[in-house]
Amino acid sequence: MSRKRLHTSDSKLTARSTKPSVDNLSGMCSDHVLEILNLYCRTCDILVCTDCVLKKHKSHDWCKIRDISDEKRASFSKNLKQIHEKTLPKMNTTLQDVEYISKENQKKKTETLRNIEKQSTAILSSVRKIETKLKEAVEQSFHSYIEAEKELREDFRNMSGLSKECEKISQRGSDSDVITANGQLEKYIKQANDLDVESYRSVSSFQTGDVEDDVIERMFGSVNLARRRGRSTSDYIPKIVIKERRVLSYTKIQDDISSICSLGNRIWLHPRGSTENFALDHEGNIVNTKDFGVVASCTFARSQDGCLLCVDFVGKVIFKLSRDGKFSKVINTSPLKPTSVCMTREGQYLACLEDSAVNGQSKTRVFRLSISGRIVQSIGSRLFTIPRKVTENANTDICVIDKMHDQHSRLCVLSSAGILKFQYSSMSPWDVCCDQYSHIIAISRLGVDVQILDKNGLLLQVFSAADTAISALSISMDVDTIWVAGTKGCVAKVGLIYH
Image 1: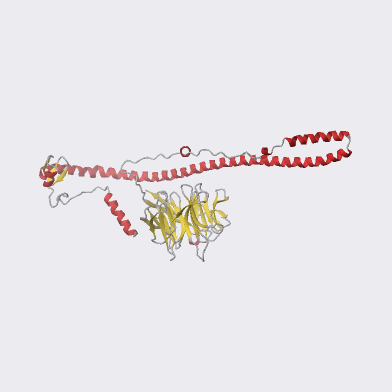
Image 2: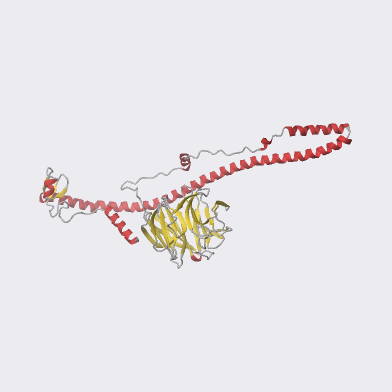
């Protein structure tokens, strides 16, 4: 099926091509069958037949071909000479310049995307500082009420003790003792009379500010896009070229890597069945080892604020690892058990959730969850067999890896509304990610082949991620790099160039 679709697409591209060509060399009229093009219309600058003259060009300036042939041959020789001497050399020089500029554009694009990420990180960091400041203010306010409660409790103990002492003084104390004790009693009585329970009630609250998109956009910044002159680029789909392909490291892990996730300058790895997880730098060196305390199932994902999302299948929890290494529970999915999660561009979650076994059988389904964990959409409830991985494409399509009962798997792509758009089962795709151009990038567990599809399921390219006899188990994507992890701790890096 893939070959047929690819052939169809090539036909369409050929039909739309703007490649210079010489048409209709047969000398026959395309409008009037079996009529020879034996006349020339000067008004329209085209060859015509006798019927054309009688029907469409009757009032035009036309003549026989032989009457114009010398003039056109001279023009033809002149243009042919110009093509060879000026036009082709100029285009060749321009092409060389454009190839150089293309490399510069690639560097600028990568730099621009990284600057956008840096600005996002800076804004999020500023937001976190404001959040911390406000929380500290609330804590300080609450602490003052706790201190007031302690003071009241101490005053109560002092007054209780004083009242007992005063009872003794009233029985056998001197006049001076009575006067002194009475002064203290009057002081405490006045304090007690001034007590107001409501004054101990906290009045701190949070008044939300206005979250306006245009204000945030101005704060974030904007991208200045230069429009290239020439053919339309509204449907621009870049050509992908492999810049670099190498095995970074077999690492010291030596276990199968069931999940990989790129987070800026760190690549997080989850060895299958382990509570301990590892972060690599872009050269393959282990820079962090973290015991999550739970087995993070088969999926890592990136949150909107650049943190690591994980799932605890046994604990029925989706949790997050912050950049400073702290864990926080995002959603409690009980009674359902999470196997995969991703965060959408709208700030919601897509998750594969398994229900409790009934009669020895359990069912896994795909859901869209609100930020609070409420199920807002059930996706493809009757479509999937065992959905094991879900992610969102740049065009908001939902990509699901579905494991079949025969141990094969398939890629199902649905619209954001949950309507199936296409299925792809070639080479039994095992994991999937997407790039910023809505390309769908899948790996097969049968080897280390990477398959790149367009958003409509057309197979564009297949290549091997590494010249190594391993099986790929997981894949991740950042701006221009594909990361593939597999058996025996192998991690491969594939650098891309978009033309």
